[in-house]
Length: 237
Ligand code: NDP
Image (cartoon, rainbow, N blue to C red; front, side, top):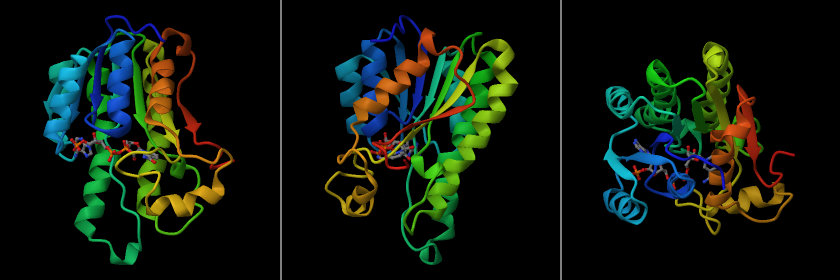
C-alpha cells in the first residue's frame, strides 16, 4: 500500500490491461481517480462501477481532446499516461496513417497531457508515463516504429523533469517488459519472440506495473525524477 489518500488523479487510458490495474491500485490506495478510454465503453463502465472511479470517453489520438480532459479534471496531484498502441511487423508494409496515429497516441498525447497538467498541478505533483523496455532495447525485428515512440518518452521525461523540478513535480517513465494484456497476451505470437530473452521465465502481471506506479506516485518517491524505471523480468538485462 502507498498512501495516495485524496490525491486527485487522472489516468489517460484506463479501461483495460495495465491502465485498469493502475485504476484499481490507486483507488485502493485512497486516490480520487478519473480515467479516460476510447473504444472500450463496456469495460470502462464496468471498471467504474467496480471501483467508483470516473470513466470519461476521450480519444488520446486527438490533441484537443487530451488537452480538454486534462484541463477539465485539473488541478491534478497525479497524472498517469498509460494509453498506448503497438504496431509490430515489417515497417515497409505499414500504413503511414496508422504509424502517425501511433505517434499521436504514444508520444503527442503524453507530451500535451503532461504540459497541460503542469499548468495547474500542485507543487509536489507526479507525472508518470508508461513507456516500454523497447525504448532501450529492440532485440528482434518488427518493432522500429513502436520503439521510436517509447524512446521519445525518455527525452520528454528528462526535459520536463528539469522544467518542473523547482516545483517538486516529478516526471518518470515506467518501462515494462512483456505484460499479459490484450495487447500482448502471454499465449500470443509475441511470446515466442520474447521468452528466450527473459531472465524470469514468465510474463509480467499488470498489477506489478501498477505497484511501481503507486510507488512513484507516493511520498517516498519525491527524489526520483527524469528517470526510466524498467520492470521487465530481466528482458533487457
Ligand atoms: P491494452 O491494449 O491491453 O490496453 C490499452 C489501453 O489504452 C486501453 O485501456 C485503451 O482504451 C487505451 N487506449 C488505447 N488507445 C487509446 C486512445 N486513442 N484513447 C484513449 N485510450 C486509449 O494495452 P496494455 O495494457 O498492454 O498497454 C498499456 C501501456 O503499456 C501502453 O502504453 C503499452 O505501450 C505499454 N506497454 C505494454 C506492454 C505489454 O507487454 N503489454 C509492454 C511494454 C509497454 P480503449 O480500449 O478504451 O480505447
